[in-house]
Image: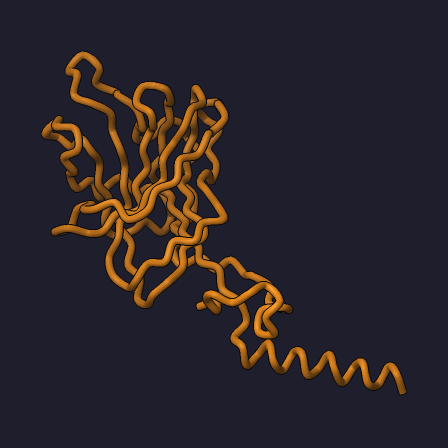
Length: 206
């Protein structure tokens, strides 16, 4: 994990270059267009809008800096990306959220989309990455399934019950998901780098 609460010019961080490390990378979903919807696909039933979620596990404390989903976004609008706790195998409480304006794309134009530059400190455990259309009825997206390395658990809301906010397991979704943390060289490694630069400077003066 990267050093916390240190000023930018601190000797342990002055030469530290952030590196994005993917702690979850399922690979992209199918490029066949369509997919699981992120809008109301049952308007005649007036049962609310569908949110999608993918469960992942952290084996150690982490700082999440990037969350992405493989999706298309047919009409533009805002999407919300959130980290939920796990409650009995389904999304529980919302820990972090970031809304992002997504430009309109063609229905077959899927790509990795999601916020970067996050600073979400999360202890080890089971969590859900949740994808939502916000505010309701102003966006229209879909997430194709068929990721080559899908996660073990997915969910949608509303599920087959049709009750908005009620999550239902939907493991066959196989959505494309990426979650990244930002790490920097350990202080000891950085110290060796600084020492090496000092020796180079001495030799150049000789």
